[in-house]
Amino acid sequence: MKLTKDKLFSLLKNPKMWKNNDIQAECPICHKREFYIAIKDNHPFQCLRQKKCGFRGNIYTLLSNLGIKDDNTIKENVKWVSTLSNALEIRQEDDINIDLNEVKLPIGFRRVYFDSYLQERGFKEEDYNKYHIGITNLDRKLINYIIFVIYNDFKQVATIGRFKGTKQECELLKKPRYKNSESDFEKILGNYDDLEKDATETIILVEGFFDAKNISDLLNVEENQVNTKCCYTFKCHVSEGQLYKLKLKGIKNIILLYDLDVIDQIKEQAMILSKDFNVKIGFHEFKNEKGELKDAAELIQEEFIYILSTLINPLDFYTKKVQILNL
Image 1 (cartoon, rainbow, N blue to C red):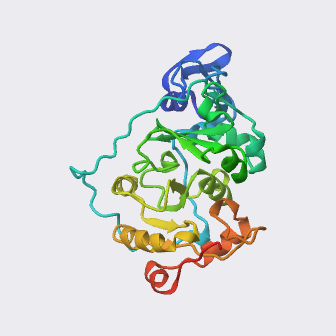
Image 2: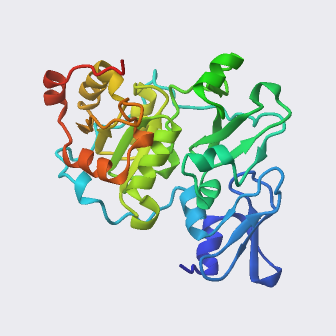
Image 3: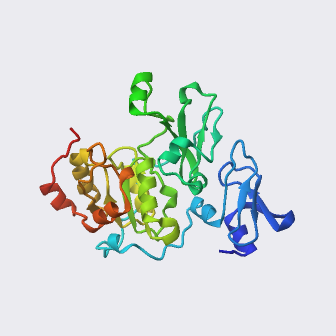
């Protein structure tokens, strides 16, 4: 892909021409004027604040970060005809506050472009450009945690710290598996900035970053440019604020793919969401090597395709499915 200079200028903040036929602009991540992008095929770019930012990639990385996608197609497995002309009338209710405060990064936060823990979880080189990932050796509470920076409306609204050891090591060291910023997670939707207003029609809703990362990979959204995206909440619950934000984006269809040990909560959320959206539920009984039901982060392509081909409507799910526990 090659864009004109004028098009690149329209995408960037405070752009100006620089030597070697590059453009200098404000970095979308750290907002410093140390961001340089080339006027050539695929437009490679890099923020030169490598120790504090280091955002780099090509035009596809940049467009993804800006929430701009040319979504013209959709996988057949998740395609259905909308029965709603749109979500319910959108109006800002006095008691619905979706404003989020911007958070500071942990002391000593350093962006990383390789991590052995993440490699074991299937991360590739491009993932370190797509997601804002780092570590810190100065904040003692976050040592040995991998840190993800979460954005909503392109503001830095939360950080998620995931302990890199095993569950047993967590218990032995008396460390929480997750150590997150003091943010209003009830209002935050992970991957919200990937949604393009009135172009993204369908979202798959999961619980947590790793579930959403795997489902996005299985959808192959970067290559196929589907108008179905994956978002995540931080528990099996969609708040009024999160629901309102989905209406603002013009979302019509929601697929719930929460873990099956919370079936009662899925039933409740499906019925609530059905008032505003076309809702279906993904159900499966695939198990991992430990004999436990897989969560969305563990699914492989064939399993995911099967789930999408056997989606259940909320009423049938409510009346026919019972709680499945990992005993």
